[in-house]
Image (cartoon, rainbow, N blue to C red; front, side, top):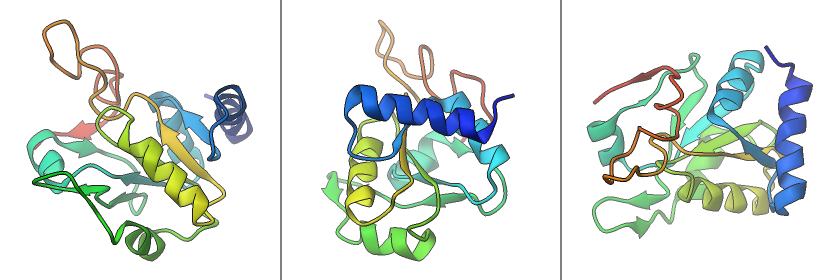
Length: 154
C-alpha cells in the first residue's frame, strides 16, 4: 500500500514529464488507492449517461463518486454546463480525479477544471474500459475494469 505522498508524487512526476496543465495523472490502481486513503478525494466520471447505462461504473466509497457528462449523448455535443455542474459537485480545493472510457475526455476535463481554479485536478490514465485490443474490444488490455478494480455492470 502506498502513502498519499507517494501517490501524489507519482502524479506530479507525470505532470512534469508530460508537461501537463493540471495537477497530474494517476493509473487506475493508484487512483483507487488514493480514493481509499483520502476521503476528501472525488472521482468524477465524465462519460455519457448512455455509457453508464450500457457499460457500468466504478464502485468507490460513499460520496466519492460524481457523474458529470463532458459531452452529451447522442451526438457528442459538448456539455455547456460542465463547469457549473462540477462546481456544484466538488469544491475547487478538493482533489478531483477525472475518468472517461479511454482517458481522452478526462484529460480535457482536467484541463478545464485546472483553468477554473481546481488546483488538484487529475486525469485517470487508461480510463474505465481502456484501449481496444486487436479485435476492437475494450476491457481486455488496459483500464479500470481490466485492472480488476471494483465496478458494477449495466
